[in-house]
Image (cartoon, one colour):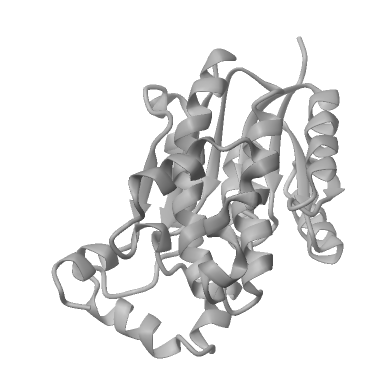
Length: 273
């Protein structure tokens, strides 16, 4: 019997928390842009009893994502894929957000859709940002969902000057994540596998701390105060929800996006923010 493989793309707090559950009884392939962070996390997981391989990756590079998928398949049956890599508006330019958070996600969905094993499942960590605002015109959302990946950034409305600042790019990218996941559910389904996305709100991670010290800090504090939960979420809570979507309890769920934001978007819709 071939070994099962769990691929964890992104070795930040959320990716690692999910990986600890997804990797039980499986070989773990950990991939990240930062080799230093990746290797530190890999050593921690090995100390906890996991069998871990590492693979440096820039998900905005199609060839690199293809190589990662092939490396995963060479280890055994790929039955879990977790994409938790990305950049935030404070960390990156508009172009970088579009290339990593939008295009990179599309690459991962496409390439792992070619190697995911029957009975396998995947999850994309998106963001509540994709639920903000009034959405986009129907034709824009259709193009974001179904444009071939190689042509995605050639869409006229994705030109940096049309998108706007990195915050606008992030919102657009995260909406596109949910749309691409829904579209990918059909191709993953042809292989007997499932794919979903999860849109956390403000989770207590180093990335969130960067945002809390950036130009939008007061906005984030206002979201936390106004939300029903009245607090930040934790990586452990995201991991618990992801485990449900990835595991047998979520076997009838695919192509969906689950918002878990403590009530921030609900407060926005009610006009409280």
